[in-house]
Image (tube, helix red, strand yellow):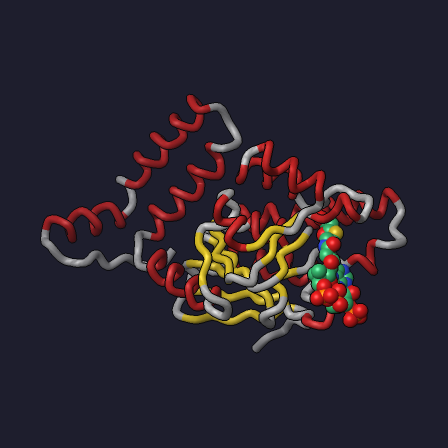
Length: 261
Ligand code: CAA
């Protein structure tokens, strides 16, 4: 049963689908929605039956059209700082989920919506997806990590252009600059995300989890430390049953059968 007001949560064969559901405001993130996201992310982190998480938006028009401008309009500097910190915390929790996270982006992913997509590990965009950090047109900077994750994903030059101009780009351009992994026909983003999620779920959950940790943590430190961390995780794999199963299955010329996370 869905116990949330602004998000829908569905479980399908080890895959959790979290859909932002405020279509009247193009799924803009107000405080209530962000609080619900925070709650569901905490629950998913603990749920060992969930192998992959997908974030999407309800309706074809928007993934998330940003943080809720009507709520931010009258904020004081202190309120805005706290609001930003809360959003940053929720998106950091999404980024650090132990499971891989895919954004199925349908329609507008602007401001906080683009930031939500960037907090996910992988982005699949429908042809009607539109991306941008239009905050500079509103007199603000991005507040939920966009000024930091965007340059890390597309490089500083392209990121600064998007941040300074507030330009909105289409899915093809987002693919060209490396902001999204894949572009699919309108209405297919969730299906494609589910197909990728099913493939990921068939791999070793231990290995996939360590791959995510290696990539995430390695990006925060120098290459030498990152490489050393990889060696630790590589070693740990050999202490887990998945390595035995994976390599035995290869030698026995059969498909490996892995447990859950
Ligand atoms: N906050 C609150 N309401 C929003 C919203 C937002 N971010 N985006 C859209 N809406 C609302 C509109 O106000 C409108 O409501 P009403 O019907 O009550 O007037 C409804 O959603 C439909 O939107 P439009 O009529 O504007 O639809 P459109 O098709 O003409 O335009 C759009 C679509 C280009 C996405 C346009 O809605 C838009 O520009 N939205 C704002 C995008 C934006 O600037 N996002 C960044 C927000 S700041 C941020 O996110 C800061 C941060 O990092 C934390």
